[in-house]
Length: 440
Image 1: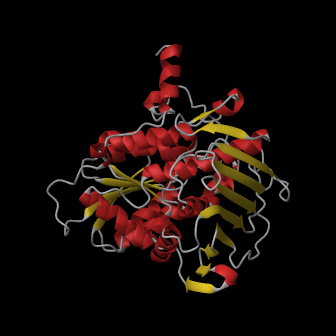
Image 2: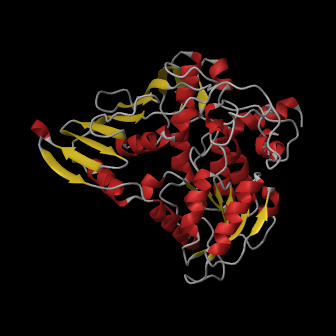
Image 3: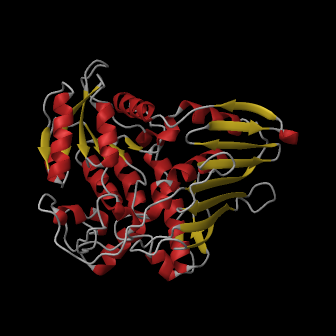
């Protein structure tokens, strides 16, 4: 492929396209009734993957046909979990291409590190599989756009693992906000305050014999193995993750954007972020303060603002919630969090309504499997996931460059800043089979 052609495809991948309504309906499963279990494969059997698996094996409407992981120990545990549940012993593989080539598999659940989310999801859609992909859905902005295009092109369901979108108490809270319970919501805040661990400092070393590290790196730029890189710690490295803002923070950011009622990208993003507490190999900030603005038509009353705060060294309750959200309306305020529900205050700080609750992963599985059958778009459709992940990526760019980013929401491009614009995508390993075809 010539350089000009490659650049054209890369730029095209960044264009926000409006697809006909007919293409927003995923194809229905053929010759299946509500009693027929949907054949599911789990790709990535680590912490969150294991959490999914514990729930999936208890369901009667899904059957775990295959499991995939590049770590032999994790793969064996996952295979055993399915077998002990009473379901037939699944196929266990280390290469996800074997999952994609298996005609029995109707849907895949991707719980890999972030750098594999988009490549695996795009390949799965192109192989005719429906997709549930963990958050953040993408490693960068361009990958998110390509995921959305793959889902629509193949008429496949693609659900993102922001389970708050299917959680009853949160859906009620959003209904109140959108129906004007606190007037016009002009500002929303999201915060991620907790105590993370120090990952220390290491030098490259040999990976464990049970780990296929080459497969783990996959299409990402090559980086030697070291002990504080995985498992789970990869999210703090630029090459593989999106920091804690993309790990836990994106849950609150997604809820903030949802409640704010904005259905496009922001046009202005600014942020400050650095390591204030941890002296280790982490590459992302442990402390961030980021602000997003939607200018609307630039008239008073039409602008919206979203604020994100992160302190990975401060496990203390803020406004009643450790990790949470606040919505500031012209006639009241709503506070909500992951473990303590929401509280809605009207004028003069009068408590109007409150409800307890916590995120409901089972409900999110319900929604995904139901949509696979019906063809309806899921509650956390990839378009919503892409919008929220884009906030994460733009915030990280602003913090890394220490400057404000002016963004074209329609074209998904940074304006008048070549360095920031280049960070909307990533470098891949040359000629790797999982590199998205539009970027190969």
